[in-house]
Length: 388
Image 1 (cartoon, helix red, strand yellow):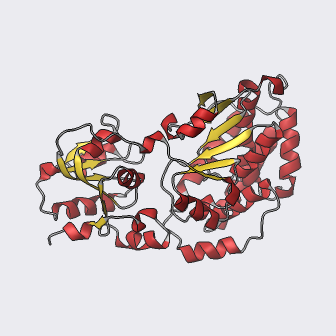
Image 2: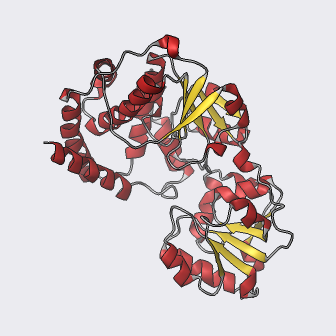
Image 3: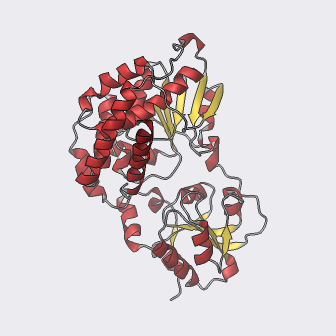
């Protein structure tokens, strides 16, 4: 039975990754119409369920059937499976400590004020075995029985709860810090944290557009970089009382790392496809700038290094694993991208910004509609620098 469960889990994760909706697929108007179709949520679990329903819009009925059928088998398995017994949580052991679920994110994304609030913040990996105690199973049944017709939703909630359970019963935190607002399980997990007297805190770690993937979220505290983002998320029907405005040290970059400005342009890549990468190359060539004055910095997680080296072989290519962002920004005059957290980071330290309006014109047009913050901040357009 166990090998089958693991295969089904792997299969489900693969389906979810392959069928996720691109953030440019829906306009503000169409997403707002979906959001307005929901009543005000009556509980934290219902907030999660509404977020799940929003994320399922656009998903094919066939994929939903596969997801729910597979999830039902796994869900039943975990609810009847006996796990190792936990020592009951002793609330007297809880101090002023927090656990950070980093999942590949550095601790410098946590605002300094939050780091000072807790005497100790320990980093905890997301992966690992999951455990459920009997109290957890009771909590799951009580809160998820209403959603029995959505096994995929319930399974995801169970899986995330099991990881939180392991942390709560082993680390005795007074708070769990995460960066997971895009997960429809987040509000449900806030309720679970309250069950054990633990605060659930979320931190912003990347750029935001108007995207119903992030709808209805609720934490005890949600730290964002700017009031603009709080308003954006409230428009997505997130609870408005949770937001705190604070910037992490990751935005306070020291760009005095290089005395000489080596590049006219550095293009910061994201998750572009091959055709978009080829268009970027052609557009940069049209600037008539010396090739040794153009740098390409690829994304450490989303880009194929081999493909980047092949397409942009005429230019200087910057490896993000070898050159820090602060050093990278210090070496360039203009910071170029379509849509990237780096543009906001560059704006915060006073660098000159160029938004790419020519590589994918449709995506650029949608940025304003989707309330991209940098459209409303000082910038120039790549089209201004192209000489046909």
